[in-house]
Length: 235
Image 1 (cartoon, one colour):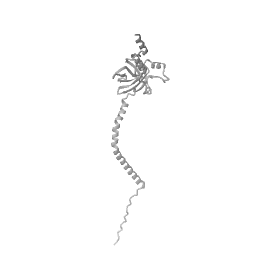
Image 2 (cartoon, helix red, strand yellow):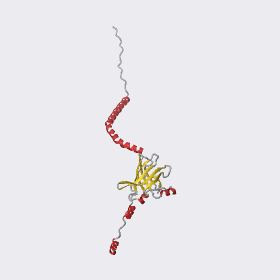
Image 3 (cartoon, one colour):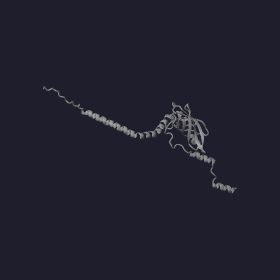
Image 4 (cartoon, helix red, strand yellow):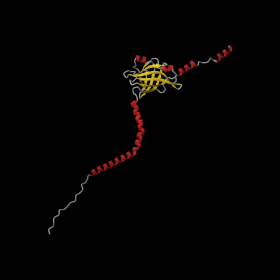
């Protein structure tokens, strides 16, 4: 019986994978697992981040809102004092030295509402306090209507009413015009320029000299004791 020739079968071998491929796969797995861990940790931290956001969001919103609604053109410190302004003209110096000057004004204009403080030479001359409060409102056209006031016996007392108009093309861009005043505490018209260092915390306060004069006017010094004794003897 003849033998059948059966072809020999060869076992196929798996293709060899270069070491670099295994390294790349392993790195991908590590990276993927790291990403998963990072996401998981992020989810764990999410509640605290959410709480932090809700805690900080109102303050952040207020800061942004303040920046948007705060009138940057008017808000700040303004002064008529030209000391140190070496290129000021003679006319500018004369206009800044009118009766009631100098004027130093700190303003905050927010949502059209005006508040601030004012120091003036007129207050130094005619009132007990040289630094008083300011409040007012900005019109649609840009002009500010404001008052200088104090509290007397617990009631608001208006010492002066004035207008502020901004002209950015002028060297002293903010014009102050007194509309009405019982005492002469403000110049009739004066120009102001921006100077953030012009209103230190210790500027103004109680007008000691005016206070003394007022006391002397309403409470004259009594006659000396010797004069009163002589008056009794002569009577």
